[in-house]
Image (cartoon, rainbow over all chains, first blue to last red; front, top):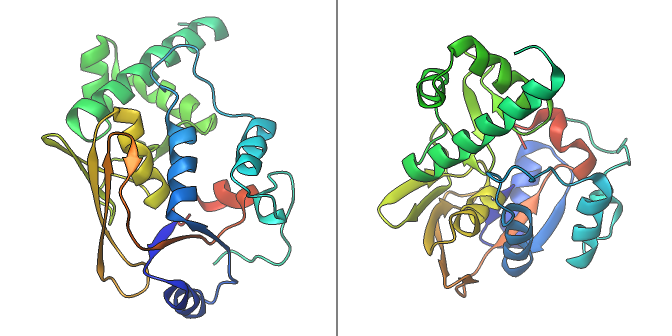
Length: 81
Length: 153
């Protein structure tokens, strides 16, 4: 996950890396996601990784509801490098 | 240490040590540092690191089996430098870099650059708020495939 100056720079990066366009978040969305993901103290004995359902619910809270954010989906359109 | 219950109990101690160490020292510990800190053997720590990696809690370096990532912290320098108080940290990506201040519960400055042109970019977190800034975050890989290649991701 990278930070870019603007849309034009994301487009150029995707073209340079021959990757399809992924998902773009505003800084505010990213900040809220980072807070929710890393806020719970991982040093605590009770801490557990989020389940698929919990992670998808968090994405949905942030308005991230497209197939890109579905953890059970396979993505035939995406080929790793 | 023989039973699964004992291993799970030990792994919680290791996880706590890893994160305490990273938060205080800026980087996750090496096997020897964790063994010394936990007063146990390197073999026990290596086995625990592997179990934590199998559970997607740590990412290990392929050759050495030392920690590469204890998310959000990176054990190696990355383009996502986080300054908080007198300490510096490296995030694995911009998401992780933004996750370090809430994990530390501290104000911080993230020094990074545009993924495309490398122009310097900075984000500031003060009093649990992200200061106004310009920029967009791009996730290249669909969520279901993040762990296919977590290092690229």
